[in-house]
Image (tube, rainbow, N blue to C red):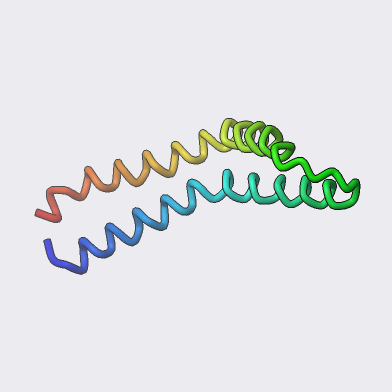
Length: 88
């Protein structure tokens, strides 16, 4: 196993981590932005108001996107295990 293979495996693992976590992070960011705009329009400056919608939105999207996330992770793991004999 040479350093190029190791760095390629690490790069793809990091890319997959970002790809799988992106929907939840974007959902939280978009919901937080919408709540902030609503708070600034209505002059309600309660900081705890945005936590519950963010949690519920992130949970809902994670449940919806879970099959896609699991498919990506399972494909990566399967590919990793299938190529072990070639790498060593």
